[in-house]
Length: 260
Image 1 (spheres, rainbow, N blue to C red):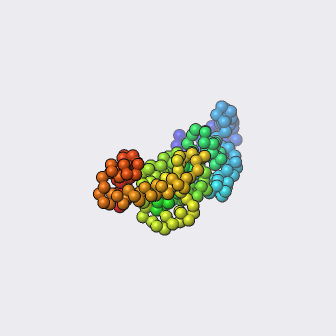
Image 2 (image 1 turned 90 degrees about the vertical axis):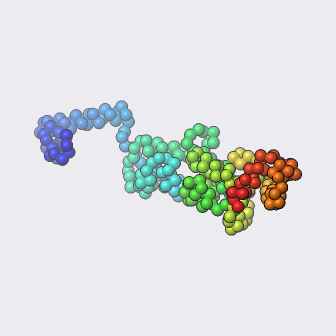
Image 3 (image 1 turned 180 degrees about the vertical axis):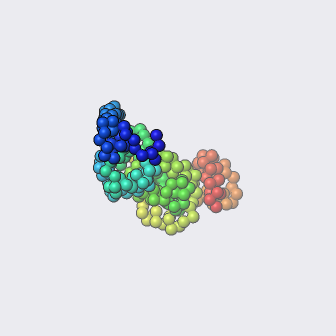
């Protein structure tokens, strides 16, 4: 029935307009009974939004998450996230409340799901900065927001989506053998005490500590390979001189050529 038509007797709309004829009263009772039955079978259609709103405010104010990041990771509209965080909604859907409350910054790495620790991503972003790759360039290459990359790099947020982590890893693998174009970024990263790619035995292992000797050795090897390659020394000879795998030297020279 079209809602443009005026309410008729025997409809709940007519009862809500103030009509108390028996058929209208009966229509309202029938609606209330069906609503109670549906709520009993399926649960409430709306729940108190206070717990979800408080959780969102803590994520934003204390953990450094942006509304856009939360919306992207949870699949909930940014307007809904913003409205809940601002306290404009007193209720929300049970599904949205469950998704928001399930987001836990104290991430358990053993728990499967959509989230992952950002430790490896943070180390990768910092390692690329040590090579002179600006954060905004890496973020653009990974197709993630600059603010998100900055929060990961500063470890303001301690978890990220597995999709974002995979994108950062892909960019890291493409750029880890290339020197970046920003000496300013390189200087800032080294002044901050960050470590390059070669300092890490396992960059994703929380128990792994950076090895300064490995970092210096990696920088020396890259410089030596670039020096020998500039004199057209064959790749296999460079690998034999430095005691390195030929495939690794080949990839390194190829990547340095792309960066040039």
